[in-house]
Image (cartoon, rainbow, N blue to C red; front, side):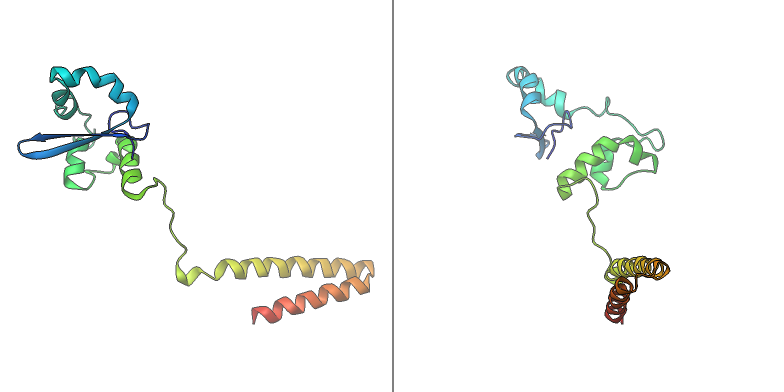
Length: 156
């Protein structure tokens, strides 16, 4: 999970505060914690960290803040994807453990790649066979012919 303040370093510290009876949690890296540690003792930290509604960035398309998006669970418009790119990446990293899609090949396409590889091999072998016949290298041509027959039998 990345730091909620800088969005770069892995979070190592969890800071939780009760506000209106609801817990609010921030995950902070050690570097950011070192910067704000002095505020803990003055009582200014909670306001500085959690009450940023007025200073939060707003999407130019729909006017949503990232807090609105997090609360609602969906992005406000198409521009939000680009505008909140860094925050979305951090959120995906936190939820899925990775920010890039690592999907699987659909079952109906599982054998397609293997068929394409065999077709490519057959094409190359047929071209090689034609070249060997032109060169009159009949012994090698016979071996290539046998390989072609084996591959074609495996396809059926």
